[in-house]
Length: 276
Image (cartoon, rainbow, N blue to C red):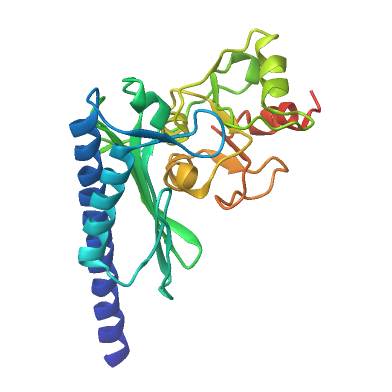
C-alpha cells in the first residue's frame, strides 16, 4: 500500500511539473512574441554579428529579456542557453534553449516569416518545445511522447515516398562553407532535377512545416542548438525522422541536420552525402 501511495504521489508530482513547464513555456513564448509584434516594421537598432548579414536587432534583445524573465520567475535555478545572452549556467538537469527571433534577417526587412523558438531539455533529452510565428498566428507545440500540435490541432508529416516528388526546404550559412557537398552543391543537384527547394530564412519554421506536412524534407549544413532544439522535437513527435549527415541520431549541439517525413530520408541523405 505504501509503495502504491508513493507511486501515485510521484505520478501527480510529475503531471504537475509537466503542466508547470508547459504553462511557463507558452507564457515565455508569448512574452517574446509580444516584443516581435511591438517592434515589427518600426524603427529599431540593428547591428551585425560574425558573417555578412548575420544581424541582431533591438527586438532580439527585448524578446530575449522578456522570455528569460518569464522562465526565471518560475524556475530561477534552471540552466538557460540563449542566442544573444549565451549560457546562464546552473547545475540543474533542466535547460531552456531559446532563440528570441529565428529569422532575424526576415524580421529586420519586414518579412513576417520569423518566430520565437524555445525548447526545454531534461538531462540531455528534449522534452518540450514551442515555436510561435505571431504574424501568421501559428503556435506549434510538442511534448516528448505526446505528439506535435499546431494551434492545438495534432499534426503529422507527409506521406510522399520519393525525393523527386517532394517539396524541400533548406537554409544557407552566413559564412559560406567551402566543403565537399556544400550547401550550393546539394542545392544545385536537387534543383537541376526539377525538385522544388525553398528557402524561408527560419530553420525553426522550416522544421515545423516539415512536421505539419507542408514540406517533405529539410536539410542545413550549419545550425546552432537554439535554431533547431524545439523544431526537431516537433518533427519527431509528428512521426518524422531526423539525423545528422552521417545518418546518426540527431543532436542539436552539432551543426548538420536532415529532417524528413521518414519515407524519403535515406534517399535524401544520399544527395546530402554526395552519393547521388
